[in-house]
Amino acid sequence: LFLGKIPYEKMKCLYSFSDFTILLKNSRARHAKADFPSKVSQSLAYGVPVIANSSSDLSNFLEDGYNSIVFEENDGDLIRVEESSGVR
Image (cartoon, rainbow, N blue to C red; front, side, top):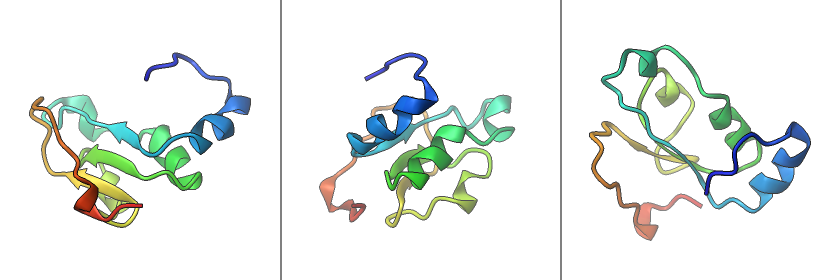
């Protein structure tokens, strides 16, 4: 679900309804290694797990199976997340 630009005041409410946040970047793209998305830190601050591939330095902040599900690569294929992953 994409909601467009969200005012900061509404972020807490929206995160409270979220089961997880998804962030998949083309890890071969130059810009994927250069930034740290604020949505990751916001999601973790609200206790919402992140589903992401390991781009930039995200792996320093995401622990696979604890606060996230981390994929090594994103080649554009559909990624299926199973409930047995243990992330809650």
